[in-house]
Image (cartoon, rainbow, N blue to C red; front, side, top):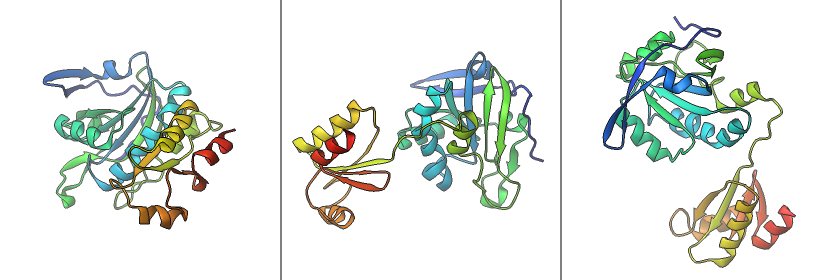
Amino acid sequence: MLSNKTGRAVPQVTFRTRQGEQWVDVTSDDLFKGKTVVVFSLPGAFTPTCSSTHLPRYNELAPVLFENGIDDIVCISVNDTFVMNAWLKDQEAEHIRVIPDGNGEFTDGMGMLVDKQELGFGKRSWRYSMLVKDGIIDQMFIEPNKPGDPFEVSDADTMLAYINPEAAKPSAITLFSKPGCPFCARAKQMLLDQGMRYEEVILGQDATSITLKAVSGRSTVPQIFIDGRHIGGSDELAEYLA
């Protein structure tokens, strides 16, 4: 039975984590005492929704969450520390702290441990998120109890809207470039100077000139897109930012 524990203390658990070549025990107090922490929990590292949407969006919105009083963003899953560390490295999610609940003790204490034997997963966490203030659960967002793996309320945008409905979200920026291009370097520096994070697509490595021509109608670099709008090259970016 999934249970909402808003207003109660988080379970007191010691997590076995691997940091570098050392085993390091991390307690619930280490994670939550004296802090305001966003937690999101999911069925498993490297699984589709978790990897494509759940964790990446929390990482994208992390700077805004930090600006709005969040001290840490923690992802908990019933996986071992080696799997969680490998997943974090693969995701390049520099703002997220992954915590392995390998034995499911924390998840069980939260009332979120579910049986996924039909998938060969064994016991796993139901998908949920929560805001924890000094070890006390301020709010929980629990996915509806229905078949499959619903993903409707535990997302980063819902959490941010709860913390601050007026918070400005970062723009989605994609920059097409190629190695050695001085105009690309100029465009990237302009974005960095404005504190604007971007995704870089490198021709010859991530895409081809055919792809660039198909999406932008141009074959020169850089080409910049902001929130789905084609801005153009470095000169047009400078005009846009001005």
